[in-house]
Amino acid sequence: MTATTPARSAYVAGIYEHPGRSLPDRTLLEIFADVTDGALRDAGLSLADVDGFLCADEAPGFGPVSLVDYLGLANVTYLDTTDLGGASYVSHVGHAAMAIAAGKCSIALIVLAGKPRSDPKYRGRRAAGPEVPYESPYTPTNAAFYALAAQRHMYEYGTTSEQLAAVKVTASHHAQHNPHALLPRVVTIEEVLDSPMVSSPLHRLDCCVVTDGGGAIVVVSEEVARSLGGPMARVIGHGEAARASYGTTLDLTRTAATVSGPRAFAEAGLSPSDIDYASIYDSFTITVLETLENLGFCAPGEAGAFVADGGLLAPYGKLPVNTDGGGLCNNHPGNRGGMTKVIEAVRQLRGAAHPLLQVPDCGLALAHGTGGSLGSRMASATVIMERADL
Image (cartoon, rainbow, N blue to C red; front, side):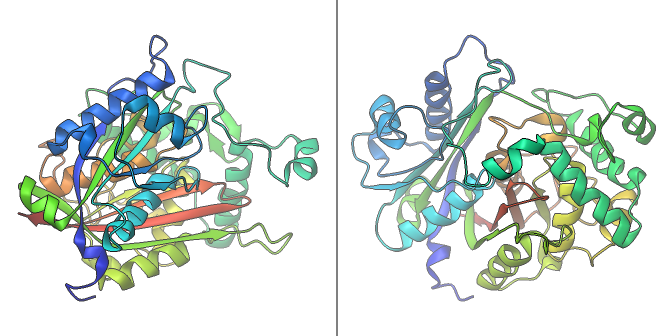
């Protein structure tokens, strides 16, 4: 990809992750306001500067219209409400970059807020899908769908529960340095395997946390970025794709990352071996293994050994991953982790991750989101960013 490709004209100038993990005393709208204020302050911008707004379907009321009104965004001329589940906010970064390149906006705000931990009735705004009448009689759970993928991966490649557990152990080693992490204690392989079985072969500690909170990202044009200055993350590659359930022909070891990843790498003019740091969606431990393989960081069936050998440990692993503790230990706001994946990737590029986990000379980072379920219909979004010193 050449320097004149439109994606290179967009920069992440502001990020903010809500520090709360249980927020019973904050309304959903107040959380949206908190993260908006935090990201704009981080960027050195104001509400009046925002002319692009992106959110998914957790927005209350009349969705983005209600949020724009509530937040006081008076100058928005571009709106995007793409919903890819947990992959939405990774997708939004790519969409914001395209909108900026097309001249639709110059300062785009991406927001997420949710309260599934303190409000058991929280479900976002999603209506029942066409598959519900056919699947609900069998009462499938999200964990069960992912367990199907894990079982198939084990059958195809000999992946073990110990290798799955190594993903959680790595996340816990990173989370111990995060003062906001919901689960900051380091755990062992044995502790993961001794935790209660949720849906075979997945144990409780193979599953992500449930948290309140949210986050926000500000993506700006090159002109705005240069006026603000400082180290930023330049968006250089983006890809997204959906994978349907295909009746009985679904390959449970292949996700839509097999499409979104190559598209992002091609746009960036890079290969997986070029990446210094990766934020990989970790709704369950199996999600990480399959995504590593599907993005090309490991050959099919090799991710288990890669993780077990410490390949994901920061700062000196072969591919440091999720240095904030990820969704397995730190934060999964609104049951949607793509937002935090982008935020930690930007921290690494800025050199602002925890000192003990900062990847040396981190110049290229990847953020990947997964939405839906590995065991049925799902979507993937991949963004590649590079450090830009303006």
